[in-house]
Length: 548
Image 1 (cartoon, rainbow, N blue to C red):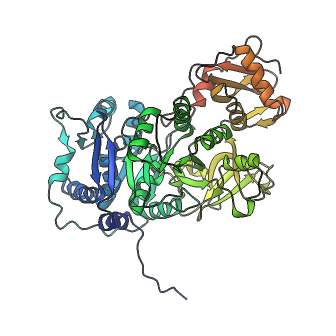
Image 2 (image 1 turned 60 degrees about the horizontal axis):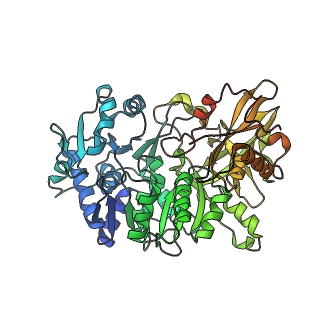
Image 3 (image 1 turned 90 degrees about the vertical axis):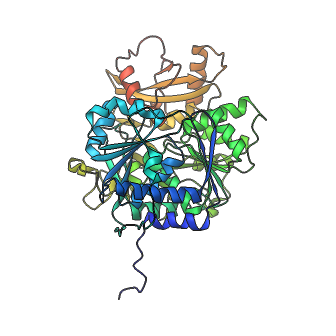
């Protein structure tokens, strides 16, 4: 027997129409390159998104054509998130921090036909312009000066009439957006997000036990809009009609805190390294910024150290950790305390909050060992695998990567994980980052989190370095906290004493080296591949070893 419900397609068109109808007076704030704030409203964004769709159709866009963007976080980029799919196209966000060769490779593989680029990012496009067959380019005038001669103005694309514009009759499973993975484990891989996936993902992350955001929030999106679908935040912001604050190119802690205070932000999202910098500024300058009481923030993209949670607790800011992947649209889990676990001791509550957490509704997870599914005992580790309606079923035009999916349809994340009896997921490591020493596995994430619990440590990354006897041994690369005057040897001893009660002797790094900064990926994660290359010829004897 079939149900009697309407065959209502889940498309982004409904989100765009909803925000235009019910929330036209809610603001969108964009910081421009000259630090000024552009103030507009969703009613304007709605009209301009439809005008963009109409303009692209006049320019010859065909169903399924890819329109690339090379933009910072601002109103025009939000317009492309909705306007390109509204025309039946696929918006493809390019990572502006990649090299010209990488951008050329991705653009050609995606088959991008058109490009929307910020005027202040034309120099990035020039790096790969000659290598890609882009047909037309429209430049967003984000700065005060005139456009360089010879470029088409994005505003002219929107200037034509949108009268008579009608949304195409798309299937909800057609692609609406596209992102490429970072390529840290090989060739960047394209993920095409369907309308259906984007709508269901928006509904999931808006839930109270997910990102916990609501219409009356003022949301600061520090996640780059060119990375991993911006965690789905532009779509959920429009779906809910909440005030949106976009930082443009200014992602330093002071600029972000100025926005938090000036716009009275109640929700924000970013990677742990961003939150570390914000915590540093708030601790160094108590009372400088008056941000709203009860502000809530989401940290994702890397493990959340317990030390960072403690710092934000002291600052009166609720930080919630999350985990996901580009292939998951991208959010998949978040950490919160169940109602049946309210009697946990404070230390245990902190530990649970630092985990990847529990899967969102509609996301299924399992941990697989070579022998089969792990028992969920909190001890047995294996590869985390996922499936769900907003999990990718394949990569774009890359059949050779089909091994990332199991025969029974689960996506292999490449993360080593453990699940406890309550269902909480702990990401032990990335497969490529876990350290194999003498036949035993060592979690770099666990060591890093412990090291960053020392007040003298600002950042810490642990990598496996080749060893003549043990295959690999852990090497800790540490950035001292600003103003720390402890000499290197004394700090090494303190860190080893900190680790000793928590780890077996063979798990503790054989050496700790101090550096000015840890290299990062284009989206702020620690770039361990570069560290491994930097220290591949490390000699274990001599300076730096603590003698384990």
